[in-house]
Length: 300
Image (tube, rainbow, N blue to C red):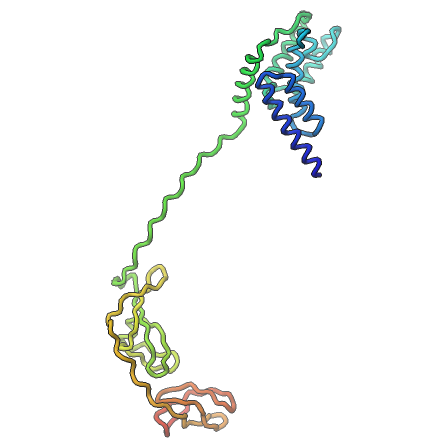
């Protein structure tokens, strides 16, 4: 497979060079390279058609010591009948017709075949072919046809799209607009020291409670203020109280005087006055305990 792919690539290069030689007026060199491409890769598309077109031009041009004749263009003998001439014309026309042959030599070869068929069919084909002796004229006409024929079959490349304009940066969050932002305050419970962020409105209305001990959070425990923007991000804003009050003194703690309602074992957790969710070390059950002091507590 690797050798076959390498042969195909070499044949494609040879066929491209053959086109370059023909456009430069070197018909013999183009024919030699096309024959090489077909010999290396017989299944290469376009190789047989290009070689047939080059053969027609080479036969019409003749050699240095012999002019080309019409029967040489068609590849028939001097004594060929009119029916044989037409059969050969139809066979070669299928190979060199410009609609099926994309070589630069196709159009000129097709015209030469038509002239040869007319001349031999009418009986006036004994003379030599009036082929262009000037290589420059041949190359110019072939180049003009090659550009127009290939440009018509190839799609026009799309225009490069303009790069998108850079997006403008989003405006800064409006911290003072109540319709687009909500203030969040980070507070810490004075009893169990659990910190959380609560809306400022709930904190001012006394609705914010500690998630652990359900103690009502106080507004004076404010530490820092955030703004929740419409884009879903937090932005810290200066606190209204740049000098927060000192934290309150920690209440005294003592061992819970209550007993487990399941196994009557006394709780060993250290608590202070308030409501606690305690776990018994004996039966591992939990219970809500309302502690009023070191000597008084009830389970709910």
